[in-house]
Image 1: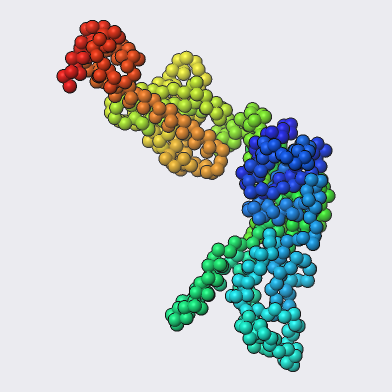
Image 2: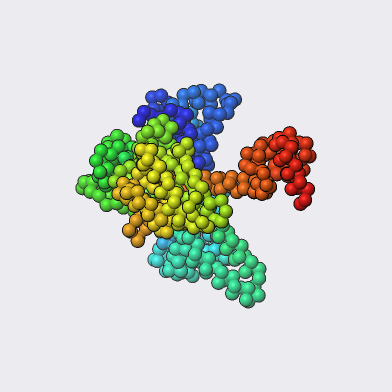
Length: 597
């Protein structure tokens, strides 16, 4: 497929937070931006009149658009920062390293300090962030300081120096902000327990701390110390409302390539995220057309080699969704938990969104390829011998009491063929018998197609589950079509499909395209059936009363309705007006009938 036009690229962008990248005709990155909603933001560039001359020039130079989906707007801000620093696009403000985002550091030392920093050193210390503002960092550190007293001095608190009495407690100790480890007034274990709790709070895991402080608050309240209890309550509320840290970057994840794969019957989509010093610096998705029945593992292995060569990657470690051998020189990690797993999940999300956008683009540019892919997927999902190019669905859920009807809708290549829809008025069944009615309409439908030598569907879908399926099969057997057409029953829960002679239903993934087509079929059958049922019911309500008058037939009723539009106007019409439509004799009978009532 040829490269989609800019207009199509914009139409198929996702309504998700992330970063968008503009490229010129030479495929050079010229601008990076962030957005809460990528599609709305990018669309605004091409729908608004820009006052700024440079913006107008930028828009004229845009030849293609790429994007990276992330979890939150904060993640988008951080990722935008990383990409601008790495690529320095022509139309972006250059970001200097001295304006880097702040982090929280837990220093690697005895009695660790916890403080903000904009610089990261590879000294074994723990770094959390980055955060989008220093205000956020200070708020969090103030919270931690209020919950867990920590030292702020930079003394070397070795055992030897503490034992020799080298240090004395400072004002912070007397203010209650520090427990005095410098004079051995706090044990190392007690201090490290606080650090452990702080580490969890920074990560967004407040369970243990909340439990501890709620217990403390109740004890204070029980002892009538209400001011202290209120102070703890305020801290609890802050803890509960605090948002967990960003997952876009993690300083521990350094110089790693991340790969994920999403595939269907015809194509595979491999996403690549390149991380350097804990930051995403590149995202690329490769589309692979399948030739044989290649496995995801085979395709991913080929793609990893191709992508790493294309982008000259020298990373010594890759994250992948399953175990695979990529040679002795490359460490392969299959993340299961934590930030590593989150970064792999982010890669998979980008692969999925790329696939969805390609589907939308193909649907616009190459509808035949779109239909072929849907048909191939449905053949596999429904366990068919051939592609279901022609599907028919029956619904008689509205056959209750009066005006019994049924509906048959027809889909060709996964799309409605409305000119071929048919409705049926039930003729041979007395009373509300859904099973017998289904048997009748299925028999009438395919007896006629056989007589007229019309093409038969590959699949018939019966709305109503096992009972309705059995009724339809009776007619199919009478017509000798059992092995020529696949008949499937749908239970009330759409993910359950029943096949003849198979007591175990087939369950489809709720997000599968096959299920979406079946949902569309059943919704159309239901809509079409209700529409016809309402028309019949409406006509019956209007005409039954008139047709009870001796000498008044259907043609007379139709003529009156065309003229007067409603039964109420017919009742109120003078005899001379009725006479002008249906003649003197019928006008007298109608007027006499309503004058008596």
